[in-house]
Length: 459
Image 1 (tube, rainbow, N blue to C red):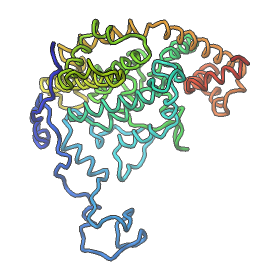
Image 2 (image 1 turned 180 degrees about the vertical axis):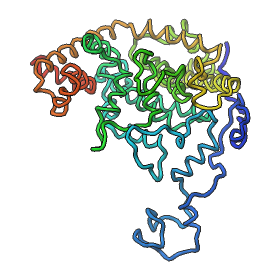
Image 3 (image 1 turned 90 degrees about the vertical axis):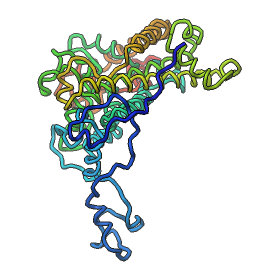
Image 4 (image 1 turned 90 degrees about the horizontal axis):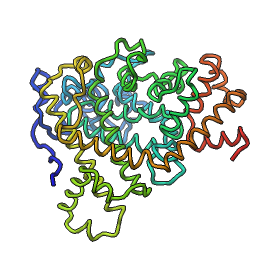
């Protein structure tokens, strides 16, 4: 029985070599967390001769440095972080100092890069907070331990950062995209999306990828100067990963053949995270058993073999089902990540993309599984489709979601005065049906059910 390929301990080549056009190595190294760099201007100021204790208002101290901070305290401002990106990242990665900018021009932040600001705006927006009570697969009220859209997004961000770090891509961009990628989802997960799409058939339909751009560009509000979050162009474009050429927004120009490497990373991190956590959730919900996984899924058998080798007799002797499942799914996730890193590094070494533009002009993903694991990952997904996603319990939840959203949609269309003030004003800009759809899409599962009950006088 085979095992996952071990982590490579090779060297990717020095940062300086990449700056001078050296080839990308197909192996992966652990980065020095403290690369050599020029000191930033505030560090230079703090290395001046010892001064008397200064207050915040004193001209003897650099701005924003409290008196309790050590004299030689070193920190990274935006310029230093950008230099670090130049030293660590490959040429085809996204570099924050080369961003195409924002729709509404803003002054640069002293401490944060452009992509750090994107990430922070996403974390602090209301649409992200509501993911806590939005369905991943189960309705959020079904249990405390099932995944929600927020827990899924956090897991995607963790996997994406691991991949980006190993491949010398922009971790912060991957994190921002991971956290934002699901904020266009309506209540009740994909079942809610299908229901809203049917309700909006005569009004432009509903797609969660298009909706996420509506959320970050129009529906979120953080400044009187502009609508939305005013995210960077690269992040906004990367949110449209599933849009067809005919639906591609004209403002982004011609649809690229492939997304940037960081968007490819997040796409694979997304599928990797949900494949693994849906195995856990399906087992905990009793929709299938370990025996079915053992019989039908080669990746499960391989992960189990790794656990047996690392912890002899543990699986046969333990009565702790949750711990047993967690140990196996941990090895499953680790093996899939290791394979993604190894196979992607080899593709990058062969392709040698010189810029993000060259990546976008390439047919097919450079980030992905190797030839051995790719069909096995597909086998796992097919198992989940048969045993989990099409399970009778989830089919019943689909009917419930369609009923709740249909009744809520019709009630709000007939009683537009029940819309919040902002959405009543929004009707004049986008039409009644689209305004109602935007309002419902932003709801959590439980709020949608409460509003349906309130407006229809039904439990």
